[in-house]
Image 1: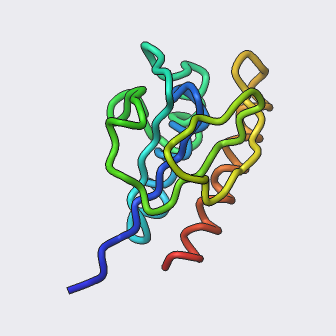
Image 2: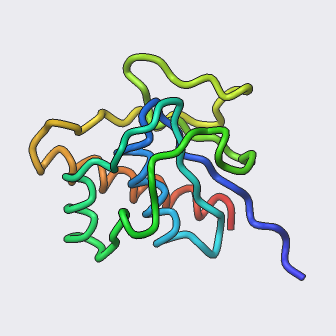
Length: 133
């Protein structure tokens, strides 16, 4: 019997863009290494539509089919908590973050900004996967 996979939570205040992308890429690229979750302290009625569209174009992933904006209290307690890099304030989750990825929020920016953030998240997911495997 294999070891239990670590649960990794990607967190930011609004669970609608960067943390959702990280959850989707975690599931897509590293499901054999860890379980991916995302959450925030405030939810949005829908995932950022630019993020949804670009993730579909780049990876064929439809985040709206598999994910939704949720609160930290709605996900299992994570083994590893990663902050997306809140410029304003990071949500308090009852413990320190294990890592802060310092990602700029691409909301309202052009497509290049989104793709740059998505590629950075992909790199970080691959690093994390290598570390946890």
